[in-house]
Image (cartoon, rainbow, N blue to C red; front, side, top):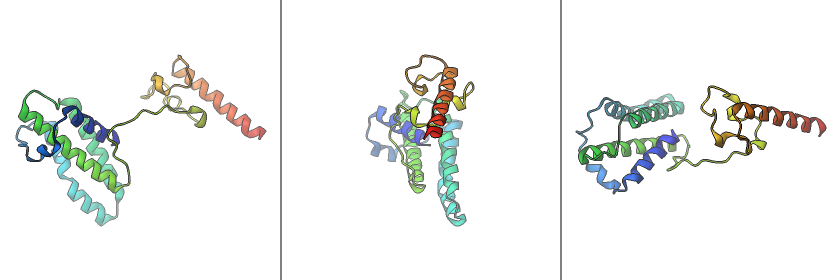
Length: 178
């Protein structure tokens, strides 16, 4: 969900225009099925908030935001936002801006930050018990990603698994000796 917010911020930054001009944009160029699905998802937000309030269910907001982020990612992967046709581009930017606002508001309601960009952090695996690549060794999304590897190892994720085993063994020996 946070990545969806950051993705929208990135698109709006690439555009570089004045976001206040997006309030009065004609949305009639938005005729695609993905655009309609995203607008329908946005339209559910006020009713969802009332329902979550009545049911005392903040988890409903989190689930809604997850679904909205999924719709946004589907839309983003299917359509180019920054196209040459000015009315279409402005309508798509307005849709992205509205989605960003709902994501930001919803994340604030559940106490989660809405970053304008996602930052990659180098993990210190000596502080952790399990590497992400070890838990999803061959089929996961961390497979063969160098920023998720241990140290300067140039090996595969299987090498990471061996490193995790060695680290956990060292940790166990340290606890037994202490």
